Amino acid sequence: MEAITQGVAKLGAAVGLNVAGGDDTRTQRSGGNLGGKVIRTSGGVTVTSNKDPGHRMRAVTWHGPRHMALEERPRPLVTDPADAVLRVTSSAICGSDLHLFLGSAPGMQRGDVVGHEFMGFVEEVGPEVKHVKKGDRVVACFDIACGRCRSCSRGAFSGCDVTNPSKDQEMMYGARSAGLFGYAHVTGGYEGGQADYVRVPFADINLLHVPDDLPDNKLILLSDILSTAWFANELGAVGPGTCLAIWGAGPGGILAAHCAQVRGADRIILIDNQQYRLDHAAARIPGLHTINFDKEKASAAEGWEGVKPALERLVPGGPDVCIEAVGFHYCKTAAHAAMVKTLLETDTADILNELIYCCRKGGTIACIGVYVGLTNGFNIGALMEKGLTFKAGQTPVQKYWGHLLDLIKSGKLDPTIVITHELPLEDAPHAYKIFNDKTDGCIKVILKTGMSGEQQGPTTTGTSGTGTGAGTTGGSVSGVEPGTAASASATKA
Ligand SMILES: NC(=O)c1ccc[n+]([C@@H]2O[C@H](COP(=O)([O-])OP(=O)(O)OC[C@H]3O[C@@H](n4cnc5c(N)ncnc54)[C@H](O)[C@@H]3O)[C@@H](O)[C@H]2O)c1
Ligand SMILES: [Zn+2]
Ligand SMILES: [Zn+2]
Image (cartoon, rainbow, N blue to C red):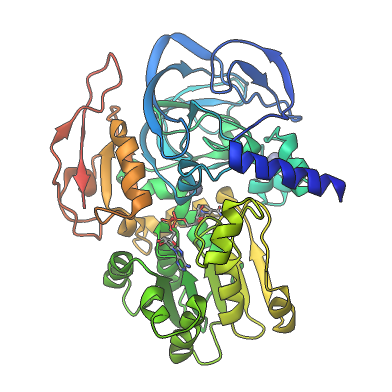
């Protein structure tokens, strides 16, 4: 109990102050993402990459709330024998990156290289790598698995027992989850893939070989948000006959609706207050129902009560499955906003309570929206008395991405429906802003390094074919790694 209290106190401090520490630190050296420390996990994985001082690259770095930058860094090298180094062609900004952008993700350090949704070409491999080789085109997953531990051997890759050195996380949760690329130090502190090059530990399990004849934009979201959308459907066992409601019309929620349709769900309802996102989804997913909760709120005394009558009209008795694709920082009530602000809690219960309230008796809540700590006023009574099943988790991407690649190849899944912006890597600070602020019609941004070798598919050439009716509005921009001659085109769909 004391450990939980201490962990939560530390978490509160981390949320407020963005402190980090408490890792398995072995030796000191200069350079790297971690302020010169070499960190090894208990499984022997080195978190801090060796660097090639002779070759510089560009990387997107975090410098505090709402402050991202593009900086030059030395290129990472193969550091452990099971590593690969990738030359990144495309990197996406995820809704989870918004938690760190806003300063809500605990344990960020200034100068951290971010990005956990990326793909490219294998540049170099360590001696133990068997399944990928230099020159292979690959997608990386956001969760770093070892492939061998108890969790990995059960397919629970995002719970890998050995890739996260954070003692803080163990104190907070009673166990460590997998390390993540380009994220807070409670998830390891590994350098991310919004960069020209990135090191991938345990390359055999954390890279998926992808075909040459599909453009990056069709493939990159296997790395995270497409796999996560599928995972939400798996948690809810969505299939023929299922009526489901999805909270959040970001990339995660829209792709969860797309996946539900591919899985044969009967009725799919998407909830948000961003009308442009609801309209974008409805135009691409035939039969989708949408609810704008701001419009419903106008006819109800309590904000969250407005959603239930709207859902009752569409599904009397409530949906079988309610998917949470929002996350811990979107407070809906003034009470939770005040408690988060004063560190009386780290996470709001607003959205989870609404799902519990709206779900049919005996139904399932599937939570893929990220939560990090404690919340007050959680409606445990309704969860118990209604006999609901509550499932949640970080996605074990490696479990699903092979199947999802087949669905993309066959044309059944088209993840490009959420991509609205394609920008050069150097525009990352602007891209974070429009994605977070929900301006310029932004739903999903793909950052292009301009590194040679990217497949030039329909999206990058600016013709139709993304499912978005995309057209090139940007001109040619420099997305050039220092010392090379490559360029990328900027596209806004
Ligand atoms: N579990 C995982 O492995 C995993 C992987 C990727 C992303 N995520 C998480 O999934 C969530 C969604 O990601 P995204 O990329 O779509 O992010 P996003 O921030 O673009 O989307 C969130 C959407 O929720 C909407 N929203 C806010 N309050 C709401 C409310 N009360 N009711 C309904 N909708 C509301 C926002 O307007 C926004 O459109 C994030 O929390 C992200 O961290 C989890
Ligand atoms: Zn993510
Ligand atoms: Zn493992």
